[in-house]
Amino acid sequence: MIATKSRLALPLLLPHPKRSLVTLFVIYVLSMIYPLVLLQEVWLGWFPSTMSGFLLSTVFGSLTICTSAAWLAGSIKRSGLSEWTAASARGVRGVYHQPIVACALLGVIAYTTVFLAMLAMTVARGPSELAGSAELSLVLLIAWASAIAWSAVGTALGRYLRSEVAIPLALILSYASYVIPVFYLTDTPLFGVLLSDGRPWTYLEPANFQLLAKLLFWSGIALFFYAVATSLRKLMEVGAWAAIASLTVAGFLGSALIPIPGSEERVCIGNEPRVCTDGAHAAVLPEFHSITSTAVKALPAFLRPEELDSTNQPQQGAVPLAPMNGNTIPSLTIDRDMLLASLGEQIFYQCPLRGENAQLTAAGLYAWWRIEQGISLQEMVTFTGAPWLLDPKLSEAPALAQALAGLTQSERKFWFEENEQHISTCALDEVIWP
Image (cartoon, rainbow, N blue to C red; front, side, top):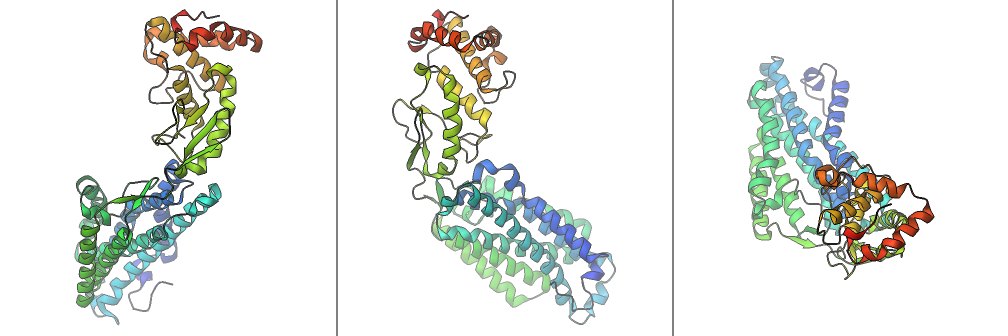
């Protein structure tokens, strides 16, 4: 598959070419796979978010592609073959063409593997959520173009600099190309040509033709540095003009994001309680409904919410609650403990807590809820956490909760009936614990 016609072929650059290329491929995939494994709550189940999550693969993918290309190109000097290279059948151009092809081809295959895996997971979770702009499919082409670009950059560095300089510089440049724009170009029109925009595209997507500008930019960069690495001056001009044209287009288009059609439409399911979210999170709605509907059965009727709503404009009287996982609220996957802990906070901390007794009662009821749902009392779980772990005055809350949980079902029903008036009217300081 990889060109080996010149005298100085990959077998001369790599002691064990097949094994080395397989190793490089594995490293590429591992460097690109972190959104697939660690950031599923951000993208899984909604096609636009899947595409945005995939673009994050290009951050560390760029590092490994560029650095390995610099290492591979630098092996010519390290092997003492520079003079023989100049006299070889195809000359310098043919020799330095090979590291570019090798690293770019492996990068393209690795990106495609990760892309197809993410797409398959999205389809399996929400087959109906593949609707969206066809332009979003350009992200794979953008990743391919970036793979070629960074392999060319690395090869150029490996050709003109010593390996001791080229390899660390390749690492620094590829990472700086992501970090510097994120910190300094976010609010500028040039932000539109970044490899990773850092946005999940849950409600918004790139403006029309913005991805095309991004693709044109990275294609131009690929042509320019390929020409630099292989001494093709005419091609260098073409690549430079393509990159300049894309920056001009991005300057006119800006980095504006436009709403995804239907992403904020109200979608509801079930009853007791009625559970609602928005169109962008419809893929997670059945699981959201199942978990919360089962959980609230532990509550007496007067405490059960009539509706849970995670839309931007919840109905009056609805308990605001979104699918939750890690730092992402709302999420496209659900952390059960975090979701139910947050639901308990919404239910038991609606009253103004005046006085230590009222605070202790609210904490005790919330601790009981955690016991009923099998959630640890010794972990924060949510950002607001377990108040008895933070305030010594509330340290008795777990004991009160254990006493309530220890009652039989009929005894607990009777206890809630006795205290229903106090809890419903927020007179929590008058609640009498068993």
